[in-house]
Length: 314
Image (cartoon, rainbow, N blue to C red; front, side, top):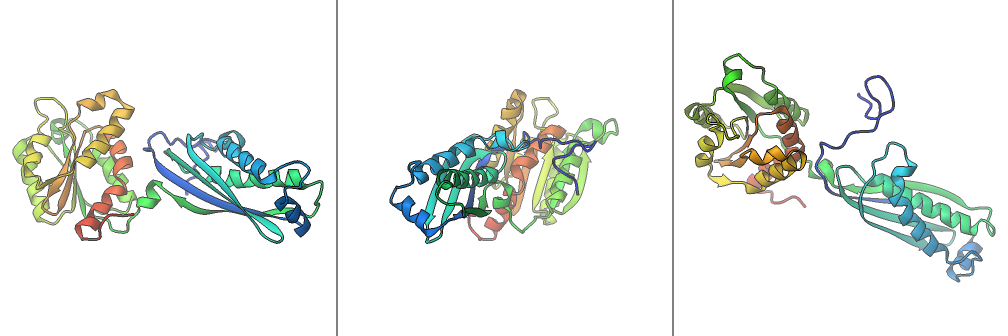
């Protein structure tokens, strides 16, 4: 397996999450600090000489969550939406729970774990003069939601990829966008039955798509022919064939693309159903293909669960 925090030379490297779209992510962590029952009693009575222990610990935990990237070298700096800590006082220990939430391109579990850890250390610091038996432990991640794992579904549709390019079809160029799509979909466990390259001709585009729909291909992804050139006819060829349009997919792709490059506004994206087949038209660049994979996989696979009557994923 590849090491995500090492580069090709074996040097420490931070993971680049810039290609990933932001999504709502939540993490919950917990831990505990054991202490003498008498210390618990003094804490409940607010009789600890250093002051209100749990208030200080909560503030410290929240502050620590916001400083996680400064404490852990390769951790990403996140814009946190919310951090909350709670404490349960038992006979001989305090249980600590922390929840962190963000809308970013990577998970927030380290922030929740750091909040618990520093809250426990703060309790230790404020009570250490009274209790030398304290012990911090059982710090763990309890729940992590958001990102691609939350959207994961088991079903993978039968897929074909259609590349539209006069030059590549004539052997004057090399297909890169189709290969990016094929490799990305196959890496996600999606069986790609065929990658076909044809010229930008409306009749040929219609013919291939009709063939694949009749043959039971469930997901059809096209690459190319979405620009403003006189030979860019993919959208004109396929939109009249849609039995249902899927503007949500179009908007998600457009928003992500324009957020990375302003020229994305000049591409004409299209997505819809042709019978039971889902068809998505993408621009013909490798970058656009890679961006589309980040947006679509695995969320788009849930469409096929919905087509089978399984409803929306919670």
